Image (cartoon, rainbow, N blue to C red; front, side):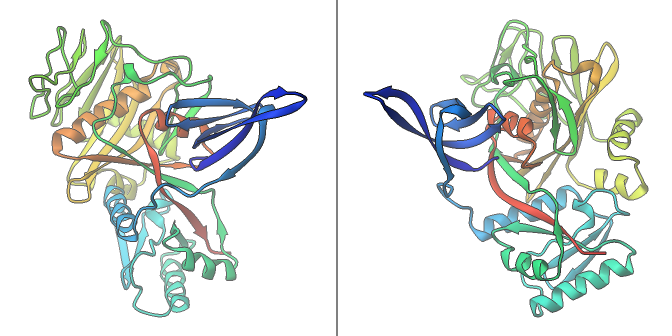
Length: 385
């Protein structure tokens, strides 16, 4: 999932012989009956019975090592562990076991010692903190580290895709509905997005210079986000602002952004992550530019999300998107993401990133519709007990 592949499919029979056609695109969905490619001409759904052969092809342009390092450092800033150490340039992170990202080493840069000795130091540091040693290995950048860990018997968790998209994101009403019903696990959270999308009364159009609108096509932003003349976004009944008190109305739902999470928001996060120790609060809030999305229906909190701006102001990070069961299948997750993206644009961010497990096919398909593509992958490696 998330990789570019070429599929040779059977499209007909002529004189008793099959006719073939090749399709190239990103694999965004795979089931027992069909696969879906995101091609240059749009989504292509191919029944498995028509697939003659398929193979993975290299990306059109692999990101440079410097680009991977820069994005990984931005992601680290967006999810800051309270306890930190170093092995040369490698980062060591601990947050009382709350999430893998905040409790794993990041082996980018020069460890200032032989590779085997660097891994020894990682193991020693985590033993001192009474935690299992874990290392996140961005690929292919950290492939040599992975080889060393293989030799030591370290296991690997499922691959994670680091995906990126240009900002602004398309408004929710322009994003197609998911192909089938089902729960979608988003980065750090979950949402049932199937069954349709939340349209905005009167229609919504996004254009250059603006992501938010009011009835009649007027874009406004308290604190700086805006549509400009010739590029306004219009949405009858919907509006967005910024800076700590942003709200957008989506049918019967209202999405508000705040500089700090409410107790209700924290309760949702605690339920999703199995608790919320003090270290977790640090991870969530110790970022200079951060917003917490609160989605309400009739005054009840039904959706949450988190956005950060890091990497010298370039990167909007999306995490902990979740919709409660009572509000699923209404497109609220897309709306939360859109509001956070609008805020990111208002701060000057030009690209968004998120992290999603490769096997989470429904989420990967959603992100593809929002414009996200895989930048690189990583494996979380775990030391043997």
